Image (cartoon, rainbow, N blue to C red; front, side):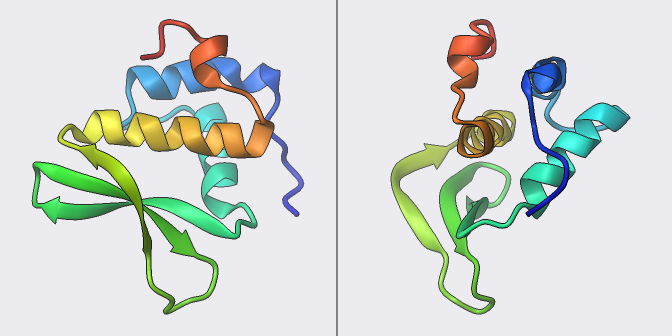
Length: 108
């Protein structure tokens, strides 16, 4: 288990990411992202490109290297920023049990 745990003190970093998911991230946000990306998961949410630069699907990357990515039914994105924000919210919920939509009402 990772030493760093995401807490309510990290909510400003969630706001930062949701406002600008692509590009430079502050050191605090990078710490949160490192935790989300490096966590000991049974699976990790990933984007699967269906049409280059225009269509992505949500997948679950299994823990076992080489195993097949499981596609999440009904989740398709046509905006990369929206996709990145959705995955961030899902990972936040998985790690904290908190719904960012409820905590940050203007995060949609």
